[in-house]
Image (cartoon, rainbow, N blue to C red):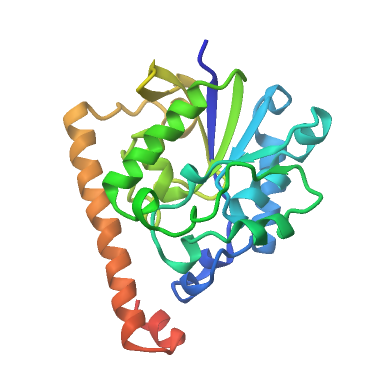
Length: 258
């Protein structure tokens, strides 16, 4: 039987505070982000049933997982599995992860499994390229990996932009900057399709009702069009930011113009 997958967007990172902070490489959580994690720990339903925690290897996602699911990690002696396929979509400095040796030093002594994080995972090239076809491929690989796990209740901590690709749901992608997911928001999914070469998620009724009430879901054509529009908008946002950064070294000027 395929597991239930509970997707979580990371807590507030320093890059979330301003456009200028997008130049920060692999930023950490803010103090408010740490507080969001403590709140999630209190409100996440049936947290004691979680039997696997998986996270993008970026520091903010790993720390979100460590702080939010501290109790279950300790009680069940679990380790957070860092899965590179869950990394964020852009190649901005804030969305580019750290080298494996730096991550090993950062999380030394903590319940974090970095065995799947190899050199080059943060290159943003080839498999890791910041374009829709590459992101869709690694999102498909991530779904297959998750659905093949023996655990029954899996938490996945990832990023606002990437979670649209993982869940194939773009229905609210314009709610925040580049994503429909709030910091530490969680949504739950079951498998609608799982085969050796394919896997798709379906959001549970309880999860949809919690965030949307009785709102009618989009049909296939509406969802496809929204995905296309949202992907193009995100690409343009990244392009605009890079153009601004190339024209000036004054990050405060960049922030003022955006």
